[in-house]
Image (tube, rainbow, N blue to C red; front, side, top):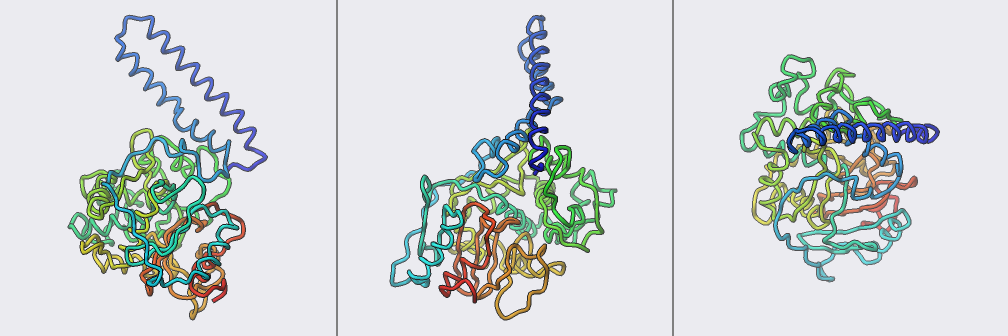
Length: 422
């Protein structure tokens, strides 16, 4: 984000810039309206002027300056969006009390800890049923939750599906084989696996906190053409040498999917995951060109996200139907060579019984070990999270703000033992 001492100045400058751009566009429109050009030509010129002025970006950027810490972001943050069309998703049934594996007392301890830290939704599910659920004011099982970077693992699932159907040979393929613009570029030698493991060399080792509006990082998040800005990322490190969590890797994976399959990324998710699993309609943010921002801003119902988690826990199978190869799911949650706490767009918790192997940049707010092996899907803050417990085939969803005081293992440890420490 822009530092506080600069945000007011930036906002003032860019408000004026946008106002001038709007005024210029209006003037040009008036000139066109007085001429003999057909209405369709007027509209074409208006659209072209909007592209030149890039009002799409500045509107989103100013909105970001207005409320940098707001959570969840207003609905306008996710507009425009495209639907991942599903069906009439059946809600997960409740687990009978006598079949629960989590005790009432442990649930209450975990929920109390979570509610003190701005939690809005928390759900525990196992064997296709809900053991416990909490929905804050204005939310229920049918609400679309903006789960941010939980969108990233969908790109890994799509790659696994594309390998299974033969569209991609293997993860060692260089992405220049799919991205024409990089066919003869050094960046084209980055492999699919290096994108999956966040070791592409395209992202700074330390993710910047102050981001200028012209930076590729902010342009990717808010800009008008995510495809072009993804391809504009410079190579900062030798691929495969450094772990650096970022957004461009997930975006490039979605572009590889589109080139390999001939389908849009959205259509491929529909075909391979949403329709076969019977998930309800979800949405993904798109840019001005209609390209999906694959790294962020998924909106999905809690039940449907939990179903995806349960499918992964079941080795890629859902209700008797094979969604992903079992071997691929195992790879998704295996420690990568570059980071023992990161798989393919997924996180692997530091669990009890093993030494901590990496420093803070490599562990997502995980200073206390998990009681037992735990995988999770989420973002860098780690607080809107879907945890997966492979030993118990249990999925735990927490949706809420990113408070300063947070330990990623606490909710799971409280659910399993009643204590935050293992």
